[in-house]
Amino acid sequence: MHKTGFLIGRFQPLHMGHRQLIRQALSQCDRLIIIVGSANSARTIKNPFTYEERKHDLEEYFKSELVDVTRVRVVPINDYKYSNSQWMSDVSMILDMYSIPNSKIIMFGHEKPGNDYLNWFKPQIDSQCFDSLYDVSGTEMRKLWLEQMPGKFDPSVIDDFKYFEKEKEVFGNYPYPETLNFCCGDAIVECVGHILLVQRANTPGRGSWALPGGFKNNDETYTDTAIRELLEEINIRVPEKVLRGSIVETRLFDAPDRGMGIPRNTLAVHIQIKPEPDGSLPRVSPKSETLKAKFFPIYDIMNTMQLFDDHSHIISTMCKVLPIPAHLNPVYMGWAK
Image (cartoon, rainbow, N blue to C red; front, side, top):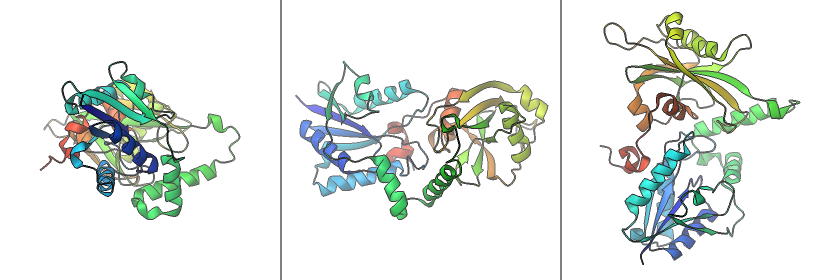
């Protein structure tokens, strides 16, 4: 019986453990589909390399191992930070799309914390785990490279690394580290299918597009923070009373693994406003903390842009929209003109 294998990983970076796992998987199946995660993530310390860069590294490895290219295929998959169900749905679509009818499907992986997904598809899909022959960690490799071989990374990743190392130093003697959190407010300003974004002028995430927002002051509420940022920093030409009256939903995003460094809890404030009488979008005139501010179509945000931190996932959750699955998105699959 024909066997189709599937292997999911982020490969940030591709290391000896991954190479061993690929070799073992190829020995157990006729065709191997390697699903590369976090395709829709912007560059961060955790995800410093783009999908295209990681795909290239995998293909170079296949060449070095003289792997028959007809036996392997690399496909992308999105992250869905706040929806495991959607991620599982995308995986199921890939399994259905790339498996041969009546063939045996096997999900390969390493036994390690965080690989619970290998059991999510049972009993319909068989899984096979291999013990790693190498004591190697992608997290440790990234840190080592950042410290000793920074030339491997985009400058924005180096800047972020330095920022969070400094943050760690500044708060290193805080007496109650288990309670230390930063409080933020972010605004989702929606207008006729468009969302207002700002281009960050400062580290972390310098140059990336993000939701307008900032740190909460001790004399204001989370909602006050979001409104203040819109009025003072973004200088949106909408009266405060209208902004407050147009709030349709608020939601706290406080996952401990949001971003990097000290946990940052944010209240997302969803504001739906109407266009100007002539049909144009409200004007904005950003100040020093942002390079630019602009309304973008939600479709473009979800499918062609990689926003700062988890901001695209916040938009997806609050506006109830989903990106095209990465393996069907021309941006990642090379179909774009």
